[in-house]
Image (cartoon, rainbow over all chains, first blue to last red; front, side, top):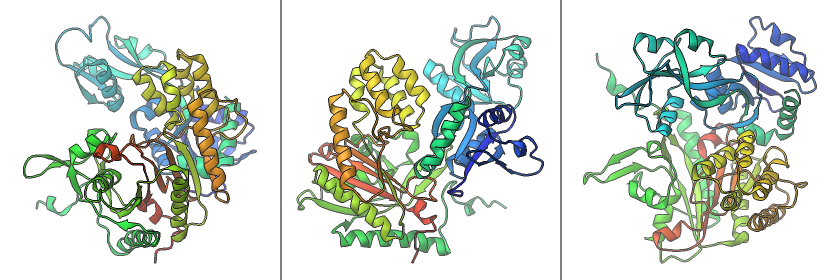
Length: 212
Length: 321
């Protein structure tokens, strides 16, 4: 585990980083290093509660927090549902909101009929759990890139993916038919850090809460 | 050339050189300290019948347990837990031994991770069988903290909870079984947004508010002072017991965690976890399981704890001689 006197936060690169910086700045922190990271990998944020940020891909944020090398992480609920197991999910940060949906080619009847179905997704675990709950047997195909392509190519009967506006779905002739989950950015915490750095951890959570 | 014979199953490792000595050394010192307090070491087989753990109600999903068969075709498992085998031994071969029965063990457990890797956890612990009551609870907690100090850990943070505390509210909440499971999971994860959502759809507003106050109004999951009085009589009794326990442990860094949910269904009363600076997870866990022995035809109270030797071996403060 890292230094006892300083908090280290793993933040998901990309969309959530911009919003996270906004939240830290509303809380009065100086995020100059975070705005211009250059080649540095650990970035100091100065303010009432100084902390250090590492930028990571979403699945790595979870890995760092679970292993205790970062005290906190900021990551989407989609990644938590897919990969998460042992950490505290302490705050819904409410930014990065989108829908997790099952979408099918417009006009097709996904649930009807007896045929075996195929679903394409970047989130095989979420998809498996969702389909199990619905009582649907299906083959799940893991796709790394544009999932919308799979039904067009005839690889899948539907997709499970996150959707912001629905524009991409519509352009590709897909329509959402079921909501799988509500997705937004979450503040997650290493369990042992919450117990052993209680005062610092509580201050940080309250700082984020106050800047939502 | 085909080199498939040269590897080992994913998730397992060879323990070589210093590591062998470190892991073995901690276990040996723990066992000898426990022997000085009257605990006799037992060793149970690495393979046991699957039925044993199902009968005892081990809550692990079957894909988390490593299974094989014996030559007769009965399903066996690589020991996924040591408390249930110890209870089996206590209720059968050691049935006639004097109570309280004080058993210690140092043996690994095996689990299958969600990604399919096999995980081996080095553990040492005790089972204290045939003694109930808060005096025994205090004795066991002091023994646990003393054992950890004995291997060099000075700074320890103990959190106690109760397997029945949140469950005391469940009957009145009118939640479906699925929602109950979701609620307990949300408590375990400190996902208070979800806790709030589930409680908002409860039939009994008063009970839901009582539970919410218990856990939420007191900060990030613990319940010191300042909460509204709890109406639920059973929850109030449990809180009084836990607070008395904390007072009895004066001088220790001990705190109440009202949101602690037992991971093992066999726990019926006090549950506890110990944290230490530098460790990224609990270094010891345990609890009271007063209903487990009954499943083996021998109704008697029992309590136990287990040390995570892997987590301990990574700590600088632990002396390794």
